[in-house]
Every structure is written in C-alpha cells, then in structure tokens.
Length: 258
Image (tube, rainbow, N blue to C red; front, side, top):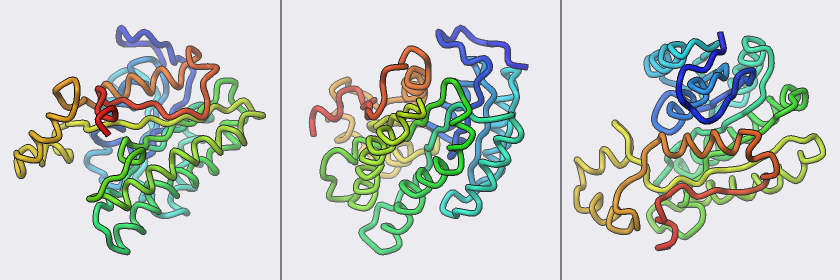
C-alpha cells in the first residue's frame, strides 16, 4: 500500500506522517506531497467535507490514509486525534503542525484564537505525539510559521506574535528533543496564493492591496502551496538529517524587503 506513485525525488516509503491542519492550501499540498512520495498520511481539520476530499486525493496515491475531524483549539480533541492516527498507521514518524486561526484583529478574541490554534495546538500535538516519535528511527517535527513572525506587521499583531512564538518554540523544542534524536524545524511561508485562500480572496475583493503585496515580492509573483510542500519534504527527509532548530523562509525573497 505504500508504493511511490510520482517522480518525487524523495522516498518516504515506511514513514507515517501526520498533518494537523491538512485539508486545504499548504497543509493539503504537504499531505499530498508525502503521499506521492510513498508515506502513509493522516490529516485532520474541522471541515469534514474538505477533509474527506483531501483523504480521497491522498488515497489515490495508493498509500495508507487516515483522517479525522478535529478542532485544533481543543486540547482533548488533539489528544484523541493523535492517538487515533498513531493507532491507525502503527506509529508516527513525522508530525506537521500546520493550523492557523488567522486571528488578524487586535482584539481579545483574535489573540486568544491565534494563541490556541497557531501556538498551543503545536505544543499539544507535539506532546501527544512524543511517545510515538521517540520510537521512530527518523523522527521529526515541522511547524508552519510565517514571515509575519519575523518582522513587525501593524495589521496582524496577534498572528505575527504567535508565529514569532512558534519560531522560538521550534528552537527550544529542538534543543530539548535532540537527545532523543528528534529533529524540529519550521517553515516560514511568504504570501501563498491558492483557491479560496487569503490572497485569492484579496485578489477579488481588494485588488489594490493584492498588487501592492505582489510588487514587494522580488520574484514578482505569489508562491504556491506546492512550493512550501517541497521544503517540507526536504526538512523531513534524511537529506536534512543534520538540520534542527531552524526556520526556513519560503517566500521568493519577500522577507528581504522587510
């Protein structure tokens, strides 16, 4: 059930990959990229329809597929999902924490949403997965941060602060888990466009802002979820075996402009 079905340069046959927040956009592309490289994949999200569609797409690669609806702002739901995924796949080798609450407003609700989903979901999922990762010979954790966590963003204080905290957590977690040979890294995507996503909506609803952001990207275009997924494959692979505690920008040079 775990044969490679693509021309991916990576071979993840025998790996069990969990993508927390994997039904749309970057998470979906990550899940499909690992499946195309031969890994068994589990995904969770709140919306069941998108989750089922993603699970079908993963299964089409001929790999073991698991999915479960999960509200990643709830600790008990995370524990239940991780336990179910590990039981279904026979363990966990790679944990990807990809959820975001998109709490863009400077309100208590926005701050608490991002705290629970962008930061604490990663902490809780890591804690729940640790016994399974400890038993893996090639364990790694990958967090999805953002370039918004690397520089001030006046319009997204909560989102940026929690992504910055996630980058710091990546370094602390990498240090604490190194003795168990569990690598921990993060990816900081720039502005990524996909159907139904933030920048797809912005292109329709606020074309002036859309064009202004694009003009600040040195490569002159928005990124794709697949380009972020390619970085995830590398960081989880044996080719990155001596890399831990790092945050990799995947942004077409956007961060260079501040």
